Image (cartoon, rainbow, N blue to C red; front, side):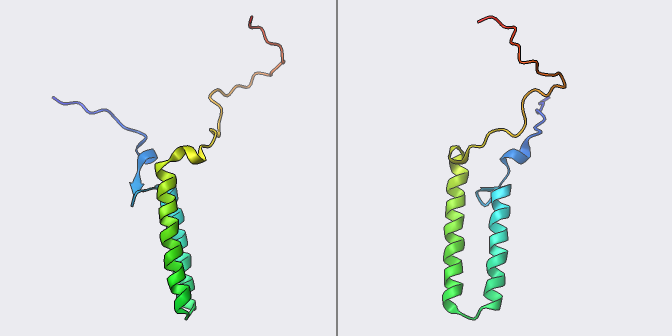
Amino acid sequence: MKTFEIYKNIRKQAVIFGLSISLFALMMVTILASLLVIIFSFSFEIIIGLFIINAALYIVLTKIHNTPQVFHMKKAFPTIISNKRNSGIDYEQD
């Protein structure tokens, strides 16, 4: 019988339209904002400009998603959390 490994980190690699979930959420917020601008503006140039801006943003976000080392962030939390006071004395030998 075939056994399957449990995969707990599926959200880390989830992709929607080639973007990670956080970048996809950013794209949707900008699309909603541009739709509000389109609704309340009657200028054809603004509508075309917003389409160009949204397309450029999508291209930039896909480039960022494909090359993650561009915006590599340091981990937020340390690997070890301890309540022990740091005395500043190092007991290890060099």
